[in-house]
Length: 189
View 1 (cartoon, rainbow, N blue to C red):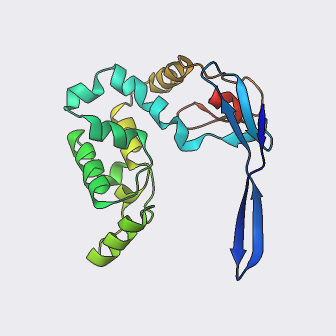
View 2: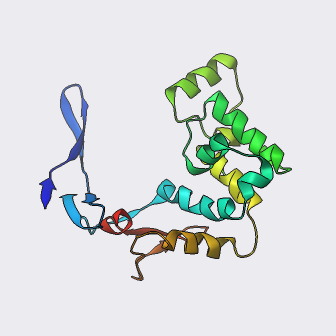
């Protein structure tokens, strides 16, 4: 197995201000651990990496077809978008398609993640809204897929993949009842 020593180093004026150790796990197609940096057993949050799993039940229940949505809507539902005008417009259209509006989103407003998005919003004098939130596409899909069994469906969809879902006590659950914190090597498999 290959061992990598990866650090992120922040400098200021030529001096090291902070150093951050990178913990990572690399697996092959069979799920065998073939490379590590730091500690592959460190417990970490999966966060936005779970978004595609959260959309699987929506797609499986013909949600895309029922709404006439295509690749763009699917991509926004699975992504952490940059808050650029095209992302904001698409998220707004997705909400409109399901009879909702920006105020129905559970996520808060924040500046666009992309530099282009920030620049364009400032130049246009755009009011930053919940639609700029990098999760607004996923939240739009989740608002549509609100059946009582949605969290169970999401977890079952994720379990169809070769990931080893942990049963350890340090597992954390997201609002969608999916495990979101566990050793790095597990979601890699």
